[in-house]
Length: 86
Image 1 (tube, rainbow, N blue to C red):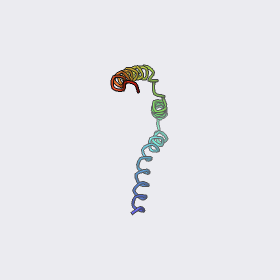
Image 2 (cartoon, helix red, strand yellow):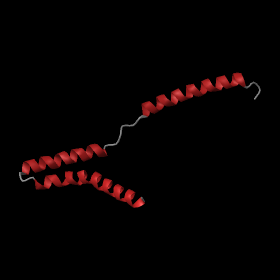
Image 3 (cartoon, rainbow, N blue to C red):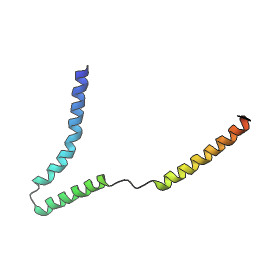
Image 4 (tube, helix red, strand yellow):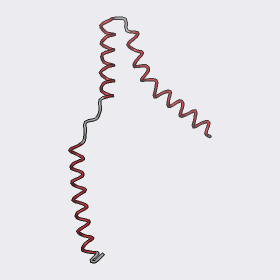
């Protein structure tokens, strides 16, 4: 049973890796220089887009922190009403 799983996972890995390597190989076989260079440029742009870091989420984080603080304050107020003298 584990041999089947290993074989299936290796096949899935090979299939998922194939398109990436095929993308890199395609430009080599284009005969026209201008077309080949355009292909390389597209590849560079795609790689740059993949490597581009995500924009910082400071505003979202700040808003969520404010919301959590308001929620905490509400919980503390409700607990002080329940536990007198705790």
